[in-house]
Image 1 (cartoon, rainbow, N blue to C red):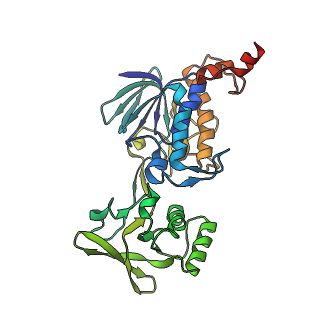
Image 2: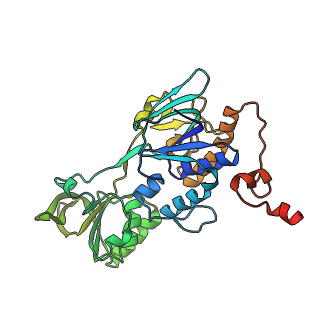
Image 3: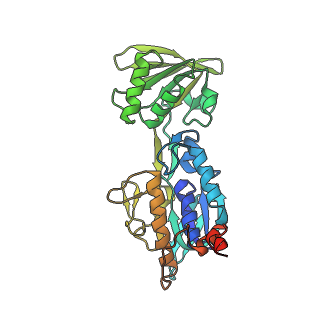
Length: 347
């Protein structure tokens, strides 16, 4: 049995930043994730995708953001456990929690933070016969290294941000690129759709309204795909690789059985402490919901900051809380492992 002040479930950006905010308050944590490493969706689905709305970073790759967060939390020495899905959470009479994982770990935790993004997730797959045989070799549901798709004949399926982002990124790097979406309306950012249509008009890519009908193969190799247009026309497309971005099929998994209030598969929290209906269990990031909720990484960072104070109050209700600033607080400097330059200059 591992005893800890806090267990954080989910090692995506918000879970990692929760370590930082707790660390500033002198609170130690263990963090768990069912994936094989840190980063959540950022590292798993779009590690090279640029992010533009992180304060003070005009542009930051998704994996770069995770790497920066990992460096930022180094002073706090959080223990990380990967490949560990939390299967059981039970609150004891003393207010603490027994937490168990599918891998056999057991924790005695003072509080829990759920930062599991959309929960456990799997990409929605290309629904044509024989697709499974080429997944990971010529059919992909994420892009980890964009360079692997340069100078190839590509067909991209989907109408959301991921599909459009990679269409725009790869249009001038592929031998040919066709975007296939089942209808004319898109879920992606309007500016991305406009740019895609401009490139299509300029002959830089092809856009087809339709759906995948069947795969074309030669021996054990995928050579293309047949797409049925909404007008009934069949398009025979050569392809070295198919990229399908139909979104995720999120599943809360065991979280749905922990007695937490849910609204549309998200955990209901307050906006003071980001605590769920179960005292001592908090939720930050995409997995929570409240009036005005916006699923943005920067919003999750804000939630983690307030949750840290709520957790401190839950663990130590008799302790007075002080808001201290990392620029001036000697205590914060000590916890961060930095030199107190102001004191040094004064000496």
